[in-house]
Image (cartoon, rainbow, N blue to C red):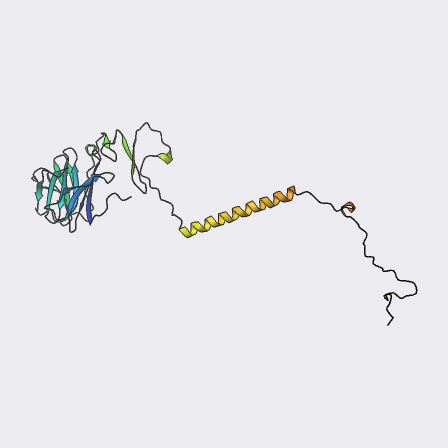
Length: 276
C-alpha cells in the first residue's frame, strides 16, 4: 500500500503515535520536511526554506518538537510540529560531518558521526555541554534510545485524527486503502485473528479473451446437457409399437400375377397375334 507518492530521494522518517502524525524528509532539487496523518491524508509542508540535505529526523514528544540534521548545512535544527518557532540548536563543531542517527531524550540530543566514529550528546535547547560518549566505532548503523517514557501508555490516534484508541491500534493493509481498528486486552481473538499487520494479495484478473473462452465452453456444455435430457425424456415417454398380424391389412390384388390364357394358345401370345 502506497501512503505517500511523488517523493524525490526520501531520506528520513519519524512517527508521532499519540497525535497520529507521520513526518518525513526528502533531499534532491526540492529538499524539505513534510507531515501527514498515518493514513497518508492531510499532507502538509513543515520546513521548506533554509534547508539543503535533511538526512535525519527525531521527535521530542513531550514538548511537541521536531529535530532534523542538515548534512549540507552541518547543523541540527528544530521546529514545532506545525513548522513554527524554528531554531538552530547545534552547528558544525567537528562532530557533525556525516550523521548515522539522531535521537532526543529528556534534556539532550544524541547523534552518531560516521567520520569520527563517535556517539555524542549536547543540550537539546542550546547545543551546549557537548560530550563524546563513545569513540572509535566501526561500521555504525544508527542511534536509538529505549525507555518507557518514550512509549507512553496513553490514548493514541488510530489512523485519522478523530479516531482514538484507549489500548491498541490495529492496522490492516488492503490493496485499495488502509483500515484501522481499536483492540482491547479483553478482546478474545483466535490465532488467525490476532492483531497485527496483514496483507491481502488480490487475485490476478482474467483477460477478456480467456473469460470469453470459458463462457463459451460453459454455454456449450449447458446446451449439450439440456439436449441430452430432452432426448432421454422423449424416449422414455414414447409409446411402444409392437408388430402384429392385425396391424397389417391384406387386400386382394386386382392385377393377378398369372394371366389366364385361352385354350390352345401358348402363353405370352395374345389374340390376334401370330407366334414367332
